[in-house]
Every structure is written in C-alpha cells, then in structure tokens.
Length: 410
Image (spheres, rainbow, N blue to C red):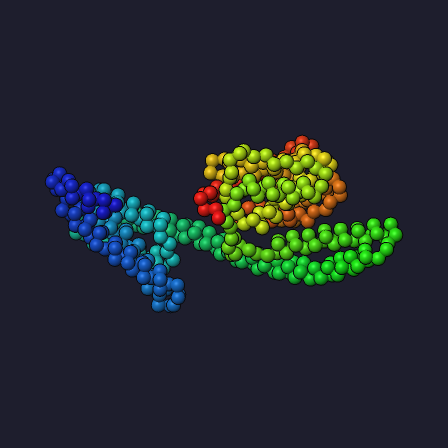
C-alpha cells in the first residue's frame, strides 16, 4: 500500500503537495518503506532459524512478534495524528491498526500485555505533545483504554480459535500417520500371505496335470479338470491380492506412444479366439488414435472390463468395444447388454474389496479388486475411468486418456 502511494505521489507530486500535512504523510510513507523490508528480512531469517527451535530462537521470535505488532499499531497511531490533526478524531486509524493487528497476528497473554503497555505509553506521549486541553486529553486516554481492552479480548478470542484449529490439524496429521502405518502393515501382511499361497497352488496344479497323463474314468477326469480350473482361479485371486498390496505410487509408469486402434483390434481378436460364446465387436472411426500407454498394464485393464462384460451378459450376448476422440482425449468404451448394475451399488464399484461385488451369471466369483486396480492404472496414465449402468439393460465403462502426438511413434 505504501509503495503504491509512493508511485502515485511520484506522478502527482505537485497536486499532492498542496494537501494539508503532506510533509508529515510523506515522512511516514518513507518510514514505512524503509522499516517494513527490515521486518521482512528478519522474518525470513527467523523462519529459517526457527526450524531448530532453540530457546534463543524462540525468545528472539517472541520479541520480534511483539515489535512487529507494536509497530503496526504505532504506525496507525502516527497516521491518525498526522492525518487528522484533530483531537476528537485521533483514534480512527489507531482503532483500525488495533483491529488488523489483533486479527492477523497471534500473541500469548504476556505479549498482548507488553504491546498494550507500549502503545499506551506512545499514545500518552503523542497526546501530551498534541493536545493542550485537559478534557480532550482525558477523553482520548479513556477511549484508548477501551480500545486496548477490545484489542485484548479480540486477540484472546482469535488466539483460542486458531489454537483449537492448530490442535485439530495436529490430531488429523497424527491420525493420518497412524492410518498410513496400519495400511502399510496390512499391505505387507496381505502381500506375504498372497505370495505364500502361490507355492501350494502351483503344487496342486502340477499334481492335477500329472494325474491327467494317466487313464482316468469320466468322473475322476471331471474332478481333475475342476481342480485345475480352481487353481487357475485361485492364482488370479492371488495375483490381484499382490497387485492390491503393492504400493506403486512412487514408481514411474513407463509408457510409449501407442496406436490405440491397433491395440484394441488385437485385444478383440484375442477374445474372439477364446470362444467365450459372446459376440465381441470393435467399433471405431477410420482415423487412428494415439495415446501414451503402458501396453502390459493397460491390456490388463481392458481384459478386466471385457471379463466383467462377459461375466454379466447372457451367452451369445453382444459386447462392444468402442473407440472415439473427445476434444483432447482418446475415449474407450466397453459396453454390454447384460444384467447391469443396481443404482445403489454403482457408487461403490471402484472401491477396494467393494461391497458391490457379485457372482457372474455362470457362477463366477469376484474378489472385488479388479475394477479398483483398473482405475488406479488408468489414473497413473493421467486418464479417468467411469461407469454408467441401467439395471437389466447393460453397462458402459468409459476410459478417457490424453491424446498423444502420432509423430513420436516408433
């Protein structure tokens, strides 16, 4: 504010110098411009020193705070005397300075008392110098006492308010630390359990494969086939648990510019060769679309979406994989015409171990992790993933990724 006033006075010095008491205002303005940078410089030094929190730095910081608070109030007091030169109005800027100081700075009780003592002493001296009338002198002293009392009350109220907020922030930070520790411990246990399950599952699968080499009757052969299928499913669950337990937030996702059309065509052809019974079609404009993609991880996302579409669609039901461009995004949709998702479950489908997990139409079980993992992978690509569904009409899962420049393709 003082710098702005100095710039204005530079361009309109002739007009402003005609104002009454211009010289006094000019002196106060220069004083502010010289003193405030000193406070700012000391503030920077104290902030750096305060990180160590020695007794000396704490003591010096409290002195600095008292000095700065007193300076603000005395500045308002000086401006008030110099601007008005009217004993009946000398409290105007003084009151404004008190309110600003009480509202912006935080003082302990001893600091408030010291500041009040300092400003009352300065105010008394200025009144003695400027006011000869004893009645006006007493009125101004009484008014300053009232303002100082108000300053004390406002300062204490704001101190209590800010202190409570500070305690709440500390408590929240501590709770977050405890939650993070609990989450890390859970992930470690989950990872160890899932990892240790791999060996017995592999052993069971190997024994089942050895049994298939012998001549088996029909019932035993069906049982062996069921054992192998269960092992495959168990291995998928273990992989999902390991993925959920692995914290990859700090790992860089390596991506390359990929022709999304070719990626989706290849994926759809893979699914067609599996003969799952559903009609899986790819729909796209002739224009090629490109995005930065980690092919391995993104393939997993799309596999999960198509698997879910098959799981909740009637045999021979149609599943569409669509590719479009919307502004600066490449959007992929996996649409089915199956049983859909009930509206009360839709908000929870991307949660980890979601309560919206359901069995498929063919009895397939779910861990409730697939969509959560898929969405996290998409978000690491800088994209978004959302779902729309109408019960008994089908679902649409939409992925939008930032477009990439095709000139960077290999």
